[in-house]
Length: 153
Length: 153
DNA sequence: TATTGTTATACTCTATAACTATA
DNA sequence: TATAGTTATAGAGTATAACAATA
Image (cartoon, rainbow over the protein chains, first blue to last red):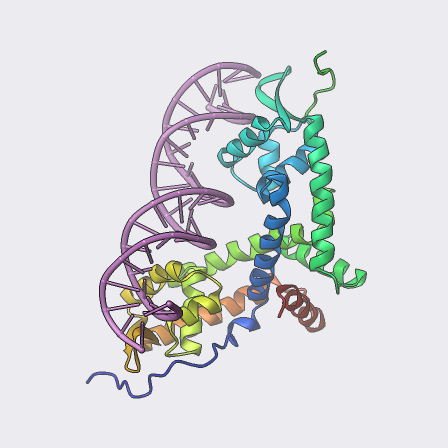
């Protein structure tokens, strides 16, 4: 016999009671908000999260190779190429051949790259201060510790 | 004059000292780990995070519409269509026309859908217990509260 | 006129295989 | 043979515009 269709009614409010028991669910939803706000924060600099991350790591570690950078960013080497292409095209970094290993590039920030990086980092600092405004230092440190533990580091 | 190229050397270790000052950075990295493990957890059920989330919400809120579900999942309606298509093709849910509004579908789980949902939820519970093994209940509650606050809820 | 579900489309991020040039 | 960077390609996830059916 066919299923009874008598009690088909749209719920007036959608409950996420099962999902909200999971920490991962809250992490995803919170991270979505953070990511959206970060994207807006970086837009004036014409940077995305990936180009921003790459630029900061290159400024902090001048001379690193694309393989090293891809490992640090936890992305595949092929996906890094277009990111580096973009940063180089905008003259924020240079690809310099390494004399001792002519297969590899040393990634070096330009002066413009270093300046943009400084400004972007300051903007991201303001973005974090705004997003995590009610968070005291102890809780902040505890969260970083917990998140690092999850990551396995 | 050209830039001096004398001190081009690959760093032996890549430092992320600037980035690790940001909570968002730790959230992203931790969430990547959670997401990867969740993907593996759901694979035996032939579910992805999106199809899993949709199935759970449909089981918890039988009869809800696609518009309601898209809002609950925080995704655009067009992107939900293929997700519902897949769940329906696998006979885990049904699209039933609402008598009072023939534009809308009421999404109803099948018996098979409810069973798969139960099993998947149990597997995700185990996955969370494993990932957050060192996390005591107080810290867990504090994290959920903090993440909810970031989300603006 | 507005809304539900849909199609088409495009952009980003991600993942893998295969190529080149160097080692 | 192995590695660095590259190309090509394919799969997800996400976003917007526009359409048919219905309200």
